Length: 380
Ligand SMILES: [Zn+2]
Picture 1 (tube, rainbow, N blue to C red):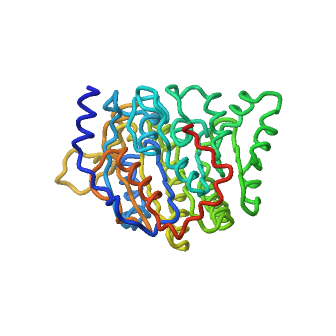
Picture 2 (picture 1 turned 90 degrees about the vertical axis):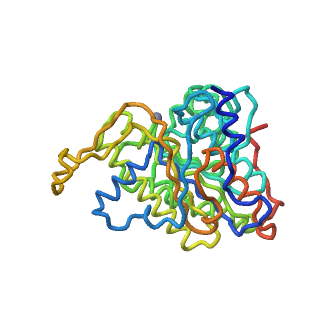
Picture 3 (picture 1 turned 45 degrees about the vertical axis):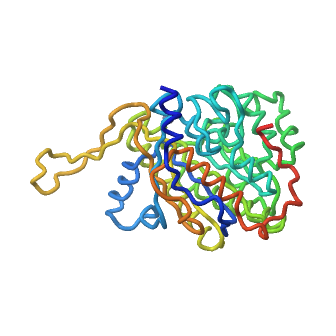
């Protein structure tokens, strides 16, 4: 099966932008709704009475194929790795190929160019999707190793849960000194985060594990603050631009549990965060926002409540086909500068590679390579 998949990748026509062109993209904001399939987006449209949503205002759309190298139904580790590094891998693998070779993430490559980087999630920061952007391990469950990778990643702003894994990895309160020694200011609630000023490194650990469900606009507030912090740090380094990854992590949890209210709340929260990012892009020239999913979860269907399709509507029912992930393609919505640079139906890894390509082919006069301080390359 693996050989079959690899041959498909080799034969696939890459519809991403030409590698020869330069582009004016300065900032990339990657937004991942974990488990968010097209049905989730349809649900938001339907519940908004088909008034225009932020999804309907996308400047461009793409579809991705999400299978991993050892399973036609991916997990978040393999899918996150594909999006973060441009390489498909086996399920449960983070930032490495199936034979254990480390592959570099877009955040690591951006840092190597002197750009600040950030991650915002509603689950714990060591969870598979965020970890794909900084860790390299065959075991997504190795949370202490992953915590050490995060500590040494050089990511400038990290916001999410997972404080207990820092306490477990650096016991007796040593985690605070450890983070301080890496230059991090620590925030432990959203109010402390929003009152932080200036630029520089921030580690916001807002919960022991994941954030609570139905946290309203907390993800949107954290997103807006993180973008401001990264923008300030980018300006301090000479207007070098930044890369951020924002995840609506717990859409997946609601879908795994077939719990429509939890799913709805997490989708609303993620939608507000997308609106915050798109607002930032509209007021900050050179910003590309890419909204996608790592996989669909639950096989959500929006079914007519009445099987007689000749009648007027008798109501809607949400039905799940399973409690796991599915093999559906995932939608990608692009906004702002460079939205036209990625097109078509592609592998999730091709989308990741296209975004890395955009970072590495920006106009050189926008870049200042002089300040790469603190930009540890996690792949080493
Ligand atoms: Zn899942």
